[in-house]
Length: 297
Image (cartoon, rainbow, N blue to C red):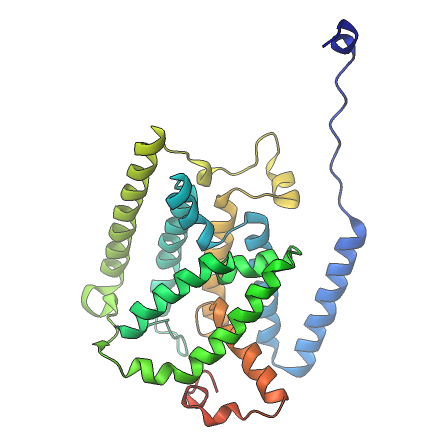
């Protein structure tokens, strides 16, 4: 490097600005969709649409997907993504377990049997996430960010969920155990405490794996703002620290439960989209047992 180059002042870093065209287009589309939902359905669906939009923003800005957390732990021995997931589960249980058992009518938790369907399905889902490059939430926020390759994953996600719905009753008839709601035996406080203890043990294991490989544990999931940015700029321009994604996803899930009567279920939307597409080309989905059950129907 020459003395002349050393003497030249460093080029100023480019500032940040809001792309007004993109923001205006997004807000116009949001308003049109909200208006159609208001006209065609019930007002509470508009509230769910707003919550869903905020959840989508949180997934995108926080780059929050479950596959990445596991992959970083297995491949790179880094556990920030896993700890973020565990914090999300813990905060969600603190809010939603009391809500589910508050006596408010019409609230239903996501309780399912533990058996053959869960074991086989979990391995199939794990393999699919690695081949497809994303889980349900990861697929949505990467497609929303313009990743064309992930559209293929989304299409086959939809195909797989609809195929699974058709033969799900057979799987549920296989050996297994009835659902085990902890609240029934431990009460609300005991169920939350048991959940936290289980999550804490997993966190200790994650920390041990990371510390063994790197000598220390990164704590990036507990930050409130990006390096060199204020909180406002971090929220507007992203990428968000996991803290913001954790808070918004937990509160949004609780609001979804309170307003819609059931927790946020990402992949169930894929099922509905696929079923409606088949109905549009003349397939009667009502002939299948799953689509005769109350909630899917």
